Length: 550
Image 1 (tube, rainbow, N blue to C red):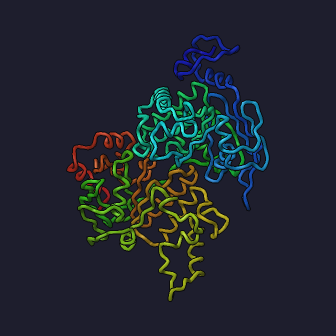
Image 2 (cartoon, rainbow, N blue to C red):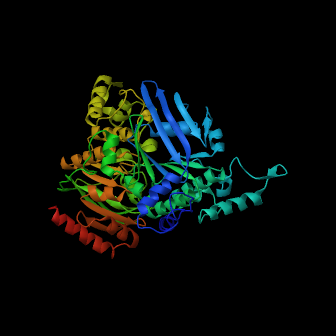
Image 3 (cartoon, rainbow, N blue to C red):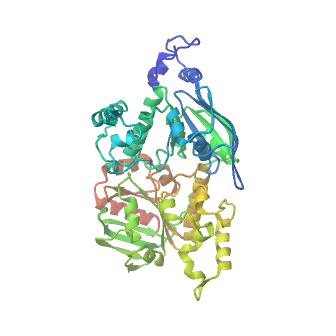
């Protein structure tokens, strides 16, 4: 069997091997390599190709999954990751190639047949019924019966047994709508295992989770793989790969370029390979240039935030940090007039204003790029051109007739400026990759000429190369005098982009940190325990303002 030291460290079962002795050794990395080699292949996708009208989405792509591994699929938006997974899940039919599972070749299968074989997919948008409870969702379509009727006692017994095996503190009787996003994620995993999943596909599983919740998910993943289950893991958070991945397959332009063991390539090398060019840094140089105050928020209070106060300056990038539910997005919604104010004051360019709707906010030169671009930022069935110009249609109207030529020229200018990759301005927004959808939302607000931009999770679900382009754009906007707020759960993003960081906790401002003091550890500390109160936060803010010359 393999080296006991490695197995104990990884929490792995003993594996029979002719190559190892069962003794402890000093080379745990060698033991990990040998253990990886011992795992048999459970799934192979060979030479998979798929075309859509005008687009070759997959070009002879290959994927090999071993028992008990976490396999990362890495690639830019549009690289073919989603298409490859949807073919495996039975949502798309391949044009050519072979799929082998447990030594048998699979033909055209429906999603239900794929699930019955033991392959389950957990998408970003959960497939749960909110008004049913946890047990009912876990065994939906596979309920235990007795004399042809639902055996409720057995249903809840099985659910509690499964939740206990996964070490989840979730009540099987709890309604799904009452659970947090992280808990719903865990229920999806339990549901997959209830159907006998041997391979679980996770698409951006940590996008809306806190660091603590991510650690819990990773612990559950390790329990699954230690029992022989396999995970296909798709994420744009590259810092997670080192913690959870065994092997990584890198894709670009519909092709699988390389499969490597975790640690064999640096992050910049992987980004460079998937982008097709050398990447030397993840974040562009900071270009913020704080000047005079353009926005002041005083004692803003709604049903979810309390006495929130801060100022924002021309040319500044103000980061909003804090755990999920701390009030970051709720503060933006209050400023935009989405959530009604109970009390507080908003001053824009030195003038107190009343904002009762997003239209009022835009009229006062404040734009909001929402957390969910698909639900709140875009009209997916409209074209790229229509989405870019929709916020300023009045500019093109003359006697109830739109000047379509001018509208097209403006949309084309901003599409070219932001390098939006598409088949043309008439292409529907829903057909674009996540990164290009985000660029369309940005183009819309750049065209509006708003001077205060609020970015809420600007790079969620966007690949590393596209992230860099978004970061460059935010920096450029600040250098040209735009005042920017960046709300993000990605702490490295907040630390590297921001002039200052406002940390929120339980709906209130917990403290301010200047650029030099805003480390990830310090942000977590303030978000967890708070500072010594609002007075200290105000003092730190005044010090920051003096340092910035405002």
